[in-house]
Length: 437
Image (cartoon, rainbow, N blue to C red):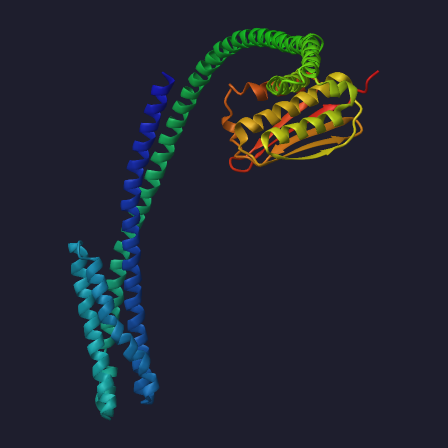
């Protein structure tokens, strides 16, 4: 209802304004034309007066300087008469009076021209006789009277046009007031409807907010549960790794060492059999390789160097062995740190996972490991000069980065990944320092 009323009010306002505009435009055009007529008539009168003044000055003095105003004024008369004929072209009644005015103007010009030529020819008695006659004065009076009547007609047209403009303005004023009242009423209806819709919207928003809060609480609880579960799984994983490392060290290590000792005894007893010695040497090499493999697996599962030598030495060993296996040039800048064992393990696992990702995906030739020690936090960075990737299009399936991020955040730290395609990758973690008790 309010929309329909507003549309009708707008249409009415447009119609009133259009009608007022057309009437005002016609009236203003008539006013402009009337003003042009008055201007042309006044100009003709002025030209005739200038011509008459110049004529008398020349007749009295005979000097050419006094004739110039006369000549200039006479030259303009024809142009002013042509302008008036154009302006009165659609007005038959005024054209008759204009023809009368033109006749008197031409007669006056002829009279002045005759006296000037007689004065120029030196005929004193003749031009003085022309001056003493009343022909010039009568023609000038006729010019003034006819021009005055035409000016009165122009004034009437001007007054009527002004009244038309005033009526158009009054009509527009009344129409605008009516439309404004209609618009106010429509606005009142709109406000009432908007208030009702706003109330309904508020109730819906409140219901949605309650549902959103409930969902956020549920998501928060589940996220916390998942974070606790992930942390628990990591702890279990590290525990299992430690258990498996101990089992490999104790059981498999004992078996391999015993086998190696048995091979050494057999080798000493079969010194006379070169073929057997060669096979036993091959078996010894295989056992040594197995022992080295066992040691590397144990270090990957649970680095003994971390508890025996500390974080810096463990990272140096990790970087050196990784460089030997992968062929990458590893640069390290490691500062000594004092942290609890869990955060040292977090840093070690982050560097280990980063190096693994570099060997799998980066296609790099150089890598750097940086460990910086500050008063209350530690910064660890792993960077490479590989092919990099777009961090905005990182796939959700990148579990390595997700695992590192969770491990760092579980230690109350923050992991930052910076990479640009073709310009390498940099992983930076900030962890607070919690010194061991």
